[in-house]
Image (tube, rainbow, N blue to C red; front, side):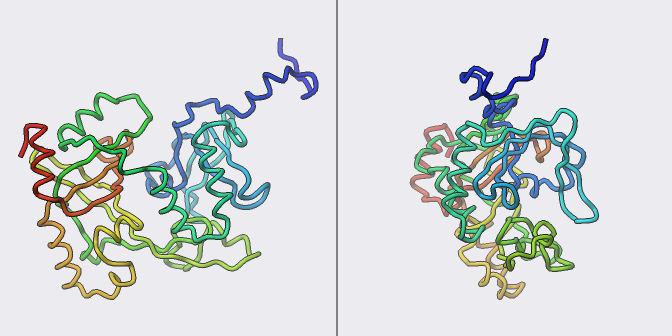
Length: 304
């Protein structure tokens, strides 16, 4: 028998359950994940963790939406989420991930979205805590061991950037993003299709690197690794504005400078059957490797 009760009739111990998601708290897509995956998510049913940007209690509310359908909206030219019969929305969920996001949006109400994202990523992942060194083969093996798990894992890889299409005119490596919501701006109309309905405040755009690279060592290759934001600027050794003023010859020269050097690369890896090779790989840092340090670390694994 099911009985509908008012809050006054319910045991206070049960009220805390209102803020517990019905799905694993780490099993979700961020808005950036949805934008990055794009059409590959069309028709999928997923979980989403996001902050409320406008309407309701803007920048004061986080929601965990379980089992929402994601589709590409041709009219608005963007991905859109739809509530279905089994969707359950938890408001301000009591989880570590949601609390971090809530604190983040409260503290960064007026700052640029690009600066917010870069700052958040850097603060949430302390590179000093990543100490395990892997080869590509070992990373792929670890991924198989972690099959079925939703937690990301981290590692250091000494490798070469084997694919870096920054001088290919057909490959877009710099994207315009809305400073309010972070979504990619429509190139044709030069407007944000997400924010265009809200005319209460002016909109500004910011440029951001969005590059996919392949990483190769003596054991194999990790394909389509994400190199973006300030990490991309640090890796390429130039700002976006400097990059945009380069000639094709200068971009090609820059590419080959990076392709020919072994780098020490910090990685975040998440199992995803939607990603190429079953692994979504994000580069957290990529700098030229110290030969002595690289030899020592790889020798400890039986490789030089």
